Image (tube, rainbow, N blue to C red; front, side, top):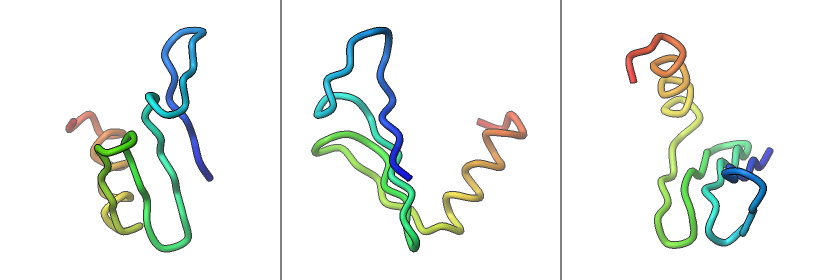
Length: 54
């Protein structure tokens, strides 16, 4: 699943951050500024967000 995070009514795909959930990893970011997490790391990140820790 790939989600593009646009702000407002304007979406320029190459400038909007993306969350790309793949079978074995999750890629978060835009163009040359990306972070690659394992599924386990992504699940930890999701829980911390849900719990209000970050």
